[in-house]
Length: 301
Image (cartoon, rainbow, N blue to C red; front, top):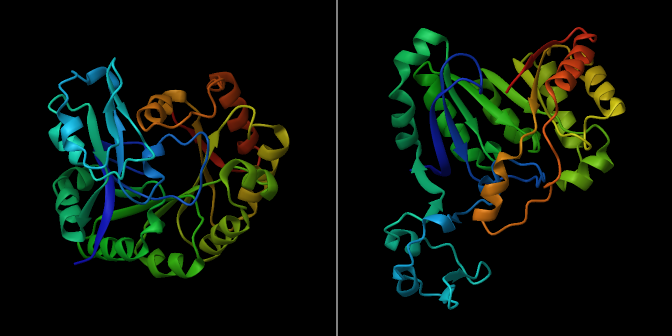
């Protein structure tokens, strides 16, 4: 049976497409954006998240770990992230749930069973299911199978994508996708590579092909102060969006630092500690500039 690595399923989502939705978050992403609000999604395999404040110093994890990654340093439990193989045995022994395994394999049938629990809400609200991440197209075989299963059940589907996947991957799934939520970050390819780790030519090419094919697309722009909110980048985004034949909607997503704690729990450094969210006035100004290009703009809190 085809399966995929899922790290979360959120019910009753209202910000990931129309109506009331179930959002399925898949592991793996080809980008490394420093503002990523789901850092636990970046690796394709599992992760261990540690909430130190919940640890009751019972010592059960010390005996459970077979790789020497967990030790006692005299004041408490210490985890060597380099030695950890993320097997998850320590999470099973943690009574206080201070250790959490992020990511589990689920079959297409298991995911569909979760999605179908709320079909009545989708029908009443015009909602459905959204596949997010990470980057869901990092698991193309699983996505192809689960999207087909949703289509067979007449469940509205949306795919939230960074766009960095080969066109053959897009081409195999696009006919079973009702809505693409397509992220755009930076228009200068060199700057895009500096902040995300990859150039943006493939991303823009895919966006153009989807639009030329007539797909329903919402362009998503996360506003990161000091990184992509300069007038030149916003102008280029507005001009490019307006040039696409079947794209009229842009959604503005304000940066927020709430993911900083996740980085700490994963044993990683948060690279944007000094950036603050954009003000409501600044977001309204950006929305107005996009509207000037004839685009319909909405702002998410």
